[in-house]
Length: 191
Image 1: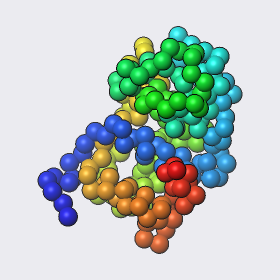
Image 2: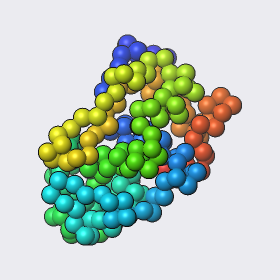
Image 3: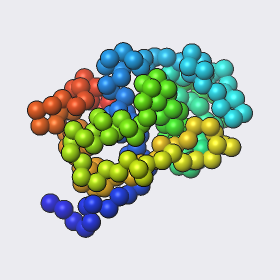
Image 4: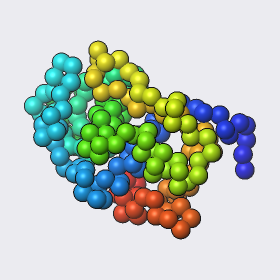
């Protein structure tokens, strides 16, 4: 079933966080990325600094939007009306839709895996899922580096290519006869 132009490339915002979490699986499974690493261990700092309490946040806190770090992101979209005063929320204790968390998670993915997010989408998903419209050349990071040095890894997908990612998730990470994302990572991300 399809409706409208399913080939049109569309900017996705919130969905990018799920795509990044899917990419993380391979590197968590093989031990390259340790979700328990704290920002202080990873030398994460930003424009105007990161508070000592905030530096206790882990990669896991970032990819689940529970860092407790309420500082400006390089791009709009954070639920600013729900932000608490900085330094008052212990990492891991409160969820808040927060672009800073996701942008730093994207930076850490690239730093720790030594891979570009867009190249990894091509390798892990676009090629094996035989995406028809994925265009690596239009993918680029966006944001204001004066607010935060961690830019947003913006993404453009067609509806039918996003549907393939949805089907991959519905099939517990399996595409045809190939396990693209481990079942354990799918379970972890959807719990």
